[in-house]
Image 1 (cartoon, rainbow, N blue to C red):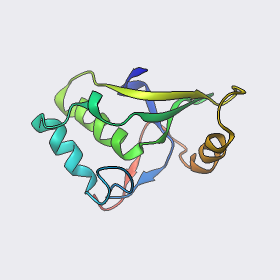
Image 2 (cartoon, one colour):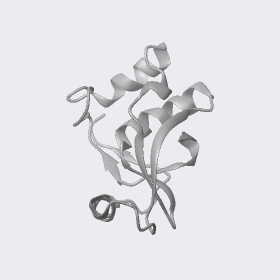
Image 3 (cartoon, rainbow, N blue to C red):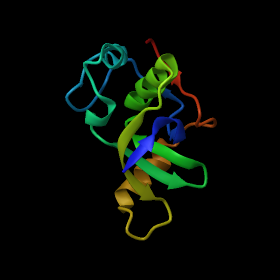
Length: 120
C-alpha cells in the first residue's frame, strides 16, 4: 500500500552511512537524497519499505535508511511523499514470526519520530 512518509516511524535509533542491502548496497545514504532532489529517483519506484503496525504506530522494520532520505526529501522540498510499503500487524496471526522477531530485535529507538545518522 502507498503510505505518506510523514506517517511512518523509525524502528532504529540510528543508521549507518551506507546502504547494506539491495541495488544501492555500498552506496552512501546521501546519494539517494541527492538523486531524489535531482529527479533521478521517483519515491514510488523504490523497493517497498517493510512496516510493522504496533501500539507505537507504523514503524519501518526494513528500510530505515531509505525512510531517512525520503523524510528529508519531503521536508526539504516541502512535498508530500508517498512510498510503497508492505504492511504487517504485530498482533496479527498471519504476520510471519521471523518478521516479528526481527521487529523486536530491531526496535532500538525511544523516539521513533527521529533518527541519528552515524558519519553521514
